[in-house]
Image (cartoon, rainbow, N blue to C red; front, top):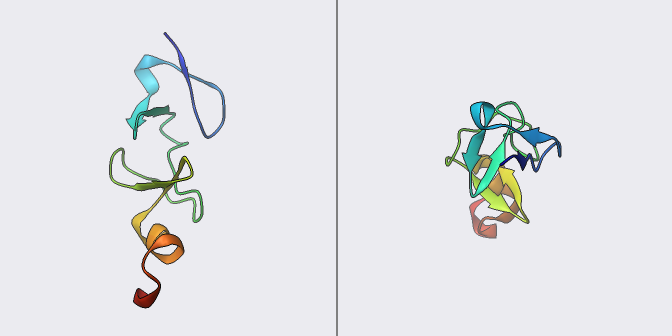
Length: 67
């Protein structure tokens, strides 16, 4: 069964996929939605079904007193 990459929308085949937060990505498509930094599977946060690095996530959605 072929899944589709949530970033580019193209098919992701078993041999090339990176699985993170229940979704399959192409290795180059798993990147922060804001700063575009490459992410490691399972080592990032998600908001509104989009991946974010921890720095961008905290800046955008973290407690407001920690800026």
